[in-house]
Image (cartoon, one colour):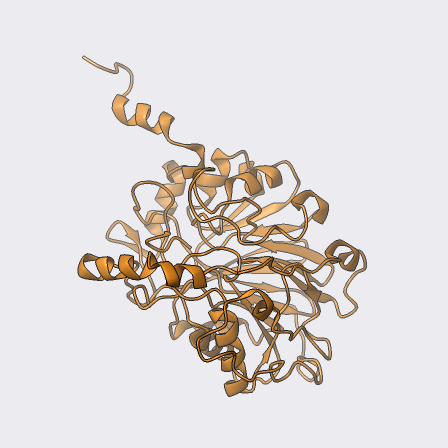
Length: 411
């Protein structure tokens, strides 16, 4: 006889041995709310469009051959020290003159200053995007500034619970502050286990919104998947996000494959002064859950509802080696896509603040100085179109808001 007083003693014992980085499974009232979600069926959250999440069978063998090929592996990392912006904290010391400023900290981590408020997207300050300190993808460049030096933020926004977007040491550091955490449905279970008070959580289903310090945050659909532990039950949702202030609005894609829903998001919440779009860690072996640069640009255009205004900033690249493509390819592909579309794109170094509505935005092809050149040499490209010119949004009416592994990918 075992475990008198507990109906599942073995399960409870195993749960107690679970590494803290795995987080916690939704349970109780949180799980009941998940089951009531229109996006949850057949025991898991569903994508807006069907998606294959990882290689399998013969394709897994093919992928492994490519991923571990010596010459290909060498092209997936920089060959020198990645240039960081040296004056991030000094530049952040004064408020943005336009009321909107973005600072890319690497990968998908972005500090957005919008209409007097500060929002931190997908903050990852850890050395590895992994549950373990000794294994897993390691940073290819340092964080531009210490987390504590950033100062107070009004909201931390998490797109989903993969390790390169939801980082245990970073969340534990932020748990001791007064910030609010806006997360997709189910992700709050992880944060509560790591010390975030339930009263500071805003846990949202797709197209649900919350107000924080006078700005409106909305979880919008994405095409991806979730999971941190040994089992992936799809019990935590993934999301893209819109943030709308009295004068400005921005979009953060999280991780997602391309899908027609970007047009719906643009219709409901756009156009945006800036979009932060995932353009890295793509592969033909998981084409449905990460966008290529060309697809990312198409998503940006969809979100803009045909408006010419608005800057696209590429994210989810340059910081971790998560896919078979060369390290510099996402940057090059973004520039090519912007030139073809005639779109404005910002290319900041990690830690380089910029104002999307300014006359000019960062356009230096900075990665070329530390990347292995392709066999045919670099394409004859310069700063992308729209790097100079009238700031976006000048002629559109502003308003307060819409109603609104890695052998298998983990980000």
